[in-house]
Length: 113
Image (tube, rainbow, N blue to C red):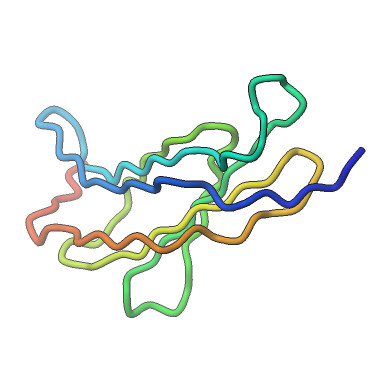
């Protein structure tokens, strides 16, 4: 078995969603790195997301499994967040983190129960 370290995921997109009938959330989507052939089934990529308010020291990390999109529900209104994603094959090493994407959470972003 080869030990592989893939490139970071691509096309990281982050968006605030505020559906009328549900809680607002941060929607994160990305694409797998292009040099890994996932269609043959030889590799399964696992993903991890990290985010933090711009001035915070600590990252919040979420394991996303094999999915290429993820929802985050616990955010602070008015904060600007940095978001990154990385991946690893089931038998290999984590990639570097993707370039950071920034998103401003609206001040009227409400966390209704």
